[in-house]
Amino acid sequence: MKISFGKTEAMADTPKQVFNWRLYWSTFVFGILGASRGLDEGLVGGMVTLKSFSTEFGLNQGSKEQIAQTTSNITSMVQLGSIIGALLAFLLCDNIGRIRSFQVLCMLWLVGFIIVITSQGSVAQVLGGRFIAGLGIGMTTVVGPTYLAETAPRAVRGMLTNIFAGSVYLGVMIAYFSNWGASINIPWTSRMQWVAPQTAHIGFAGALLIMSFTVNETPRYLTMKNQPEKAISALCKLRQLPADHPFVQAELLGIREQLEREKEATHGVSRWGKIRELLMVPANRYRLMLGCMSQILGQWSGASAITIYAPNFFATLGKTGESEKLFATCIVGVVKLSAAYLSAFFLIEFIGRRRSLYWGITLQMISILYVAIFLGIISPDKLASGNLSETDKQAATGAVAMLYISGVGWTMGWNSFQYLVNAEIWPLRLRALGSSLVMCLHFINQYGNTKAVPLMVLAMTSYGFFAFCAAVCFLGLLWVWFFVPELAGRSLESTDELFNLPWYKIGRHGAKTPDAEASNEHAWANEKDEAVAAESKGFHVEEARRD
Image (cartoon, rainbow, N blue to C red; front, top):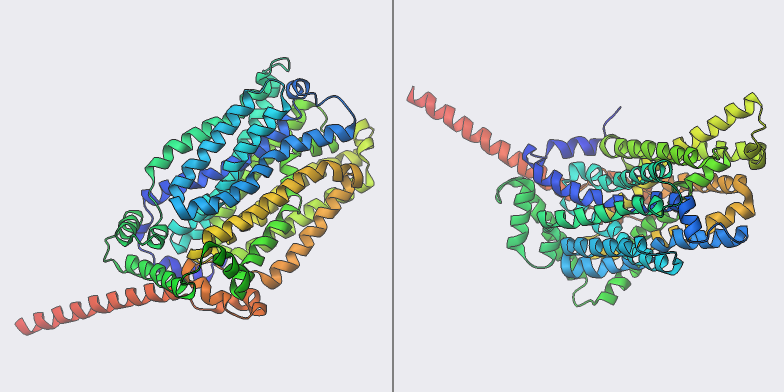
């Protein structure tokens, strides 16, 4: 497999001291934050199917439409809170910093699920608790990727930032196994059958809150807040290099130059002025388009719906027993977790963002299309009856496998890209605002998706829903080909030059623009090599004279 030029250059210019335990620890703390969304997506879908929960909250009473509405209200309430949480993250990140924002979101997440598990048959209390928790969970999608992108060396920024995306499926896997374990080990007559899995939220939120006190603020945020000494100190600790090291100096120079350019361009501009800047400057409009379209196309490609409503879809494909369909969802969790970290550690940096996105969307589209064709030929009623020929059974097994494979495609493609591009494309001044707006759209789409899917399946049938998702994947491929630039190996500060190209050249030709910070680092390295060579030559000349 051919490694991209940007990756090779970036690794060659990166001192080995940069890859140290401080970098890995801060990456772990902020990366594992992604598990918050995965826990909820995995837990809530199983929770509403558990007999203990449906009995306590009356989800087994009423018409199919009424049950679908109540179920979608419960499952989507975290997404509704997350819309506001993503906007709240912009205000907090820019005013109190990335670390303090992390701590605030952990408190909201923790309190929300304490309210949920103490509800006693009250749907209103469950909705309220999930909304509060959603405020915190929505903030994670801005705070986590922003911190990781601002602290990661450019050579491995894609890999480290995607630790967050991969952690979503760590949460999903833990959630699926928790629901499955509760379904077979705790009787449905006890409310602990659904409460016990929900306590995973409390454990994660509490542990992360404690760990947040062990990491430092980002040098880029400290520079933006005019605290240069603290910024240098934080960067030196993070890189484990002295302040006068060429690599540190080049990185600081890139941060300061970009911030100075932004200050000059937006002198005296208010927070509302930032919004005008975001909407009126062509380069920023292109950035916003990239972020928004990745959310719309990604969310409606079907993967999020499959994650949340996995037990229902497996029931459609013939897995009708409660523990059977929950165990099938556990395999989804394992597959998506493995694929997510495979993408993070091996694909994103080594083959590039665009190529990984191509492969992922194509795999997702083919697998979902198979499921759509299968359900178009063999109806869910026939599957539920169990009256299948040997060929039908083999095709059904293939459809189940294709649901798993669609998860692999999703983690390779949209799942990695939707967080990574949002963290990479924005200038420092607009990073919190741009990320918040895009992730707000992420949760608006996820909320609409979660609310709509039960009703879409009723109106379109399962066949129509999967066909719709396959069509969205195809549109996504066309969009990526024309609009998405390759950012592998680039410094965050170098994207200004890329997005200042004419809009029709950014996606197709943007990889050819130079990276200013890479040039600085390369120049520093060359100067250092020349100095060492000159010193060595002088030493040998003097030694020869003495001889």
